[in-house]
Image (cartoon, rainbow, N blue to C red; front, top):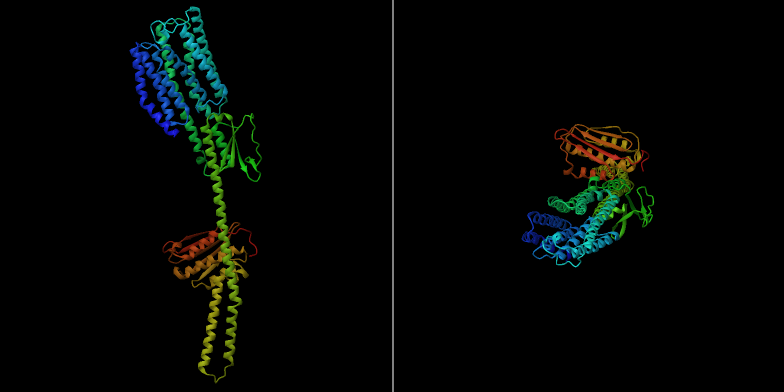
Length: 587
């Protein structure tokens, strides 16, 4: 609701400001003011209104724009101090409020909020003293020459020339004192500010300094009688400095925006997951605060810790350090210990906190993804291990159960055939011989099946012997290079065996090759299995489940597979299997 009301008020001021400017200038012209005075009303009032409306639109939550608009509107009351209305008290009041607003703008930049008791107290003193002294001067003046009038002063109640002179001197002293104190306060604030705050405050300091210098100059030279041309020139310089005042604020806001944008882009420039040290250094450089420190919350220590894990003590009030805390759902994440001067710009601190929170969240999400990926890999490895264990159990059950029964059946049939006499029924003899042959073939097929499920030779003699066995049984002549009796972890040997088995099966079925070569090799990190042939090529893992299954099996233990199979150029398959341990006895 407040935002909507603020927007409507801003639109109303924007729509009516040109008419108010023209009305004030027209009044000044009608009262006998020359072109210079009319131009002054348009330039100074227009500058404050334009600059204030821009600041109000770009930063609606900041009071600076509204204060500047108010100062611009009040300056439109200056001409009514002269004819035909001669409302000098109203013009005087508006001018006093403008003086306070100018001080407020300078002391409260960039937030628009007066954060110190000294600032608020000094502005109150400025308002009271400025209005009192100016009203006293008006009460002792014989005419309205200083307020744009040309007749006797209807508000004169003090008719003593000495008192009038003393009041004019007091007014100059007040101007000099107010300007001097304001300049001192702003310079002191600039000196204790952080780097980015100084960069933003400098244009305001320059613009305010220009206004202060012209006010002091006009005040000092007014003690002397100057030619009308010189006095007019000084007043023009004063008006120009006032007109430039809002521009200094806009430049300051632009610098703040650029600083905040740089900080917002900081984490992106550093990378998706900058290290804590990188982030701290980048924030320190961006803010111009070499003392900036980042500490992270440790649930184990139940405290904030530094980059090296050392405990970090939170500063107490009066230590000259400020603390910006970062939380997620009420839980602490990290803190930024920095120069208290950064608090003069809450938006800048919010930008820093957002950049920091983004970096911490990225790091947390990255860690969470890595943890989940690790769980997935471990799960896949367990599935492979479980499958291999089940293969081994099935092979053992077949060997100890059905295979032994078939062997026993084959022997029984042979004995039965040998006991048949010469006069045995030929049909019965043929039946027994056929049954014996069927039992022999069934036993051979069962042994082949058992080898496919889990080759006993792999467990008993190792990878080299098992691969030699595969090559011996290959339809396409195959040679093995690099086979040794060296043993590897069981999962490595099983994976390598099935890579060779699947590759040779594809050579036999599809390659139309005349020869195949199997090469084994290893270094400290990986076992390399290479199977090549001189066949027709064109192998595509996407078209068959065998090669895809190999890729999945290898991925489960962080292995890789690469296939080169140009059409007509043969096929070359290379698998790299992390050993994960020094070669030793297979499990």
